[in-house]
Amino acid sequence: MILSTNVAVIGGGINGAGIAWELARRGYEVTLFEKGRCGEQTSSRTTKMIHGGLRYLEHLHFGLVRESLRDRAWLIEHAPQLVHPMEILLPIYEDSPRRKTTIRTGLVLYDLLAGRQNIARHRSWSAAEMLETAPLVPAGLRGGFSYWDAQVDDYRLVRTVVSSAIRDGATVRENTEVTSIRRDGDSWLVRTVSDENRFALVVNAAGPWMTQFLAQNSIRASYVLSLVRGSHIILRRPVSEKGLLLQSIGDRRVFFALPWKGGTLVGTTEVVHREPLDAVRPSDEEIEYLVARFNRYFANPITRSDVAGSFAGVRPLVGRATNPGAIGRDYRVVRKGNLVNVFGGKMTTFLSLSRKVAMRVDNYFGAPRVAREPVFDVVK
Image 1 (cartoon, rainbow, N blue to C red):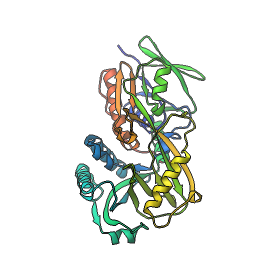
Image 2 (cartoon, rainbow, N blue to C red):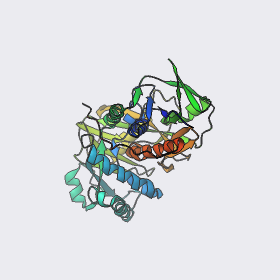
Image 3 (cartoon, one colour):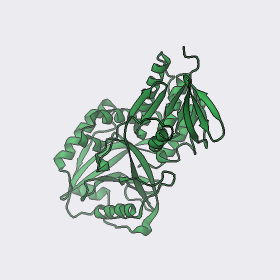
Image 4 (cartoon, helix red, strand yellow):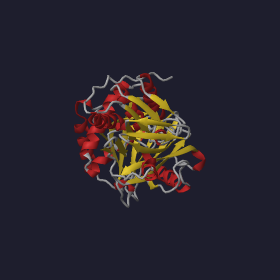
């Protein structure tokens, strides 16, 4: 018979914070451990989008897109101070790697998958309309489309979820690295640099550190993770009030140019990351890549001197492929006894992921629990 229902959650990114919040609202005694400050790693180094993943349709990931669109709608409704709709232009050029009919089909499907929760339907634009709205290179422009997704202040979202979890009963221990976990009878001993505590169940949401953490504790990983670095640059000047989704000619990748805090955010890259995880930064090659791709599409070219800043985050993607863009963005939740490991996951779907983790925790303790309604705390 299981008497204690205290749970340790390791990792204070958006998924770990969301899991701690979900479990706290189900009445569990939850402690969240984060070796730094919650949200300061990968979760604050995203493209600042809450999105369904239009490009995921190219790889037939319909389930992930549908789930993402559902979570997008919920966040827009319940966290309007952090998540707001954004119209995104998708210009088509003569040398664009995807045909106009292909993109139209994808946008129709995107709208259908969003259903009644869609922000607004996509629409077609003429070349003249595109040029009136954004300072694009006119040569070869054949018009295009616009569709809707949402933008987020990613760091503030994580901090809001953490604050909400604390309000609802979770204990959050920041600047507390978990150095090891080991079984002791039917429970786990979780050791940090300063103490050791016993928990009935452990949820490992270490993100990019997952594989390293499991290996250090002699725990077999159920999935292979590929660590993929996504880098961004921030331009000093605004480019357009609307976002733009653009296609890279040489490698078929897509990248965004988005309004962000008075400037423009351009990204992202996808590069296999092999360096240490505690000091992730864009390479010179990635910055030059983004500058060159930007200059292909905008009439007013930029140089490195126009770049006000840059940042990079490492995404743990489930699977392995020569081309990082071909790796799926779905996540996996695996429970083995009283250990739950979370592989992958993205910001948009942290709510769905957290519920799936909580269901596995309920299964271990033997009875489903109903979570209290999630209400975001107000973080100033």
